[in-house]
Every structure is written in structure tokens, then in C-alpha cells.
Figure 1 (tube, rainbow, N blue to C red):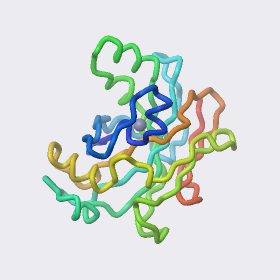
Figure 2: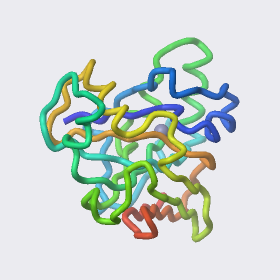
Figure 3: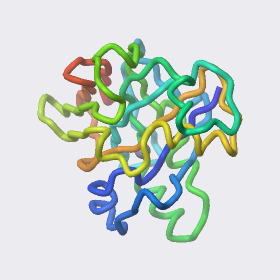
Figure 4: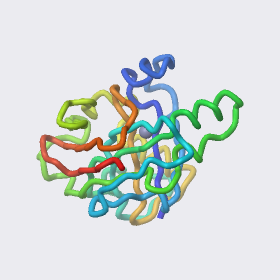
Length: 208
Ligand code: ZN
């Protein structure tokens, strides 16, 4: 399986990263993580890797593809996923900044082992709400660090599925991380990170 991620999908986050605002006329920014990046919710310990002194959390809504598809039309995209959760796209921001400054690919800063923490998947119909109106929140040591709603995405989930499937055949079990809202920050040893979707706790990670 593969993990497709969307960068820069919330303008409030783009602003905090000193990036210009993007419009929905632009194309989604995609990058990948390998399957070795997955940190399952039952192993809820994230060890800060030795190669970084500035690992950031990025809480994101994650969908799981449950049907193979290629060149999927946006209006049919909802048929290709049934389960959602929240996940953390752990990012070695210092490495990413160094690589970006040299114009080099920054995969290692995003795709390292355990950098894709996953919450428990639930049915996308569970909350009885549209996919473009889901509240999600990251609590860091009990305090709200990130508050997001999927309505603030620049590119909707269905648009991301359609766009990604032009380049990558989507297969059962593939995951899509759909971008992070504002409020990203550094993790420290001892932090507890809890991710909630529509008020329901789906993710709980201890930083070690
Ligand atoms: Zn991200």
C-alpha cells in the first residue's frame, strides 16, 4: 500500500509557514510516504528520531481507499473510500528546511519510520455529516493545539482523490493524508497528543 499526502491544503497553515495563500484553481500539492512510515494506534509511542531536533506534529483527516481506481471523476470519488480517521504527519522540520533551501527533495523529512501516526478508522457516515464539514482537533498535553474543519480545505477530499488518481492508481488499503490546519508545532519527549474527529477521540500518541 502507499500513503499519499497533501501539502499546503489550509491557507491558515500556509500563512504560518510564510507561504502565499493558494486558491482552489491551483492543483493539490502531493507527496508520498512509504508504508514503513505507519505508526498504528495500538503502538501509540512516537520516538523522536536522532536525526532531528525539530519534529513537528501535523494533525490531518485521513481516508482509506477501499476500491481500485484510476482517473476517477470527482463526482464519483466518494465511492472509493468508506473509512476515515485522524492521523499525524510527523515532520522533521529542520531537515525539511535544509533540503528545501537547497532545492532538494525532502522525502526523508516526511517519510521516515513512524512518521504517519494513524487513529482508529471509523465509517465516514458515522457522524452523519458531509465530508466537507468535519471538525477535528489536536490536544497537546490536554490543550487545544490545532483546530480544523474540512470546510477550510483548499482542495476537497473528493478533488484530492480524483487528482491523485490521474497519476497513481489507487488501490485498496491506500491512505490519503489530506493536509493540516494551522497550529503545527514542535513535539517534546513526554508530550501526549490526542486527535479527535467530531469530538470523538481516535488517536492517542505519547512522544518518547
Ligand atoms: Zn502534512
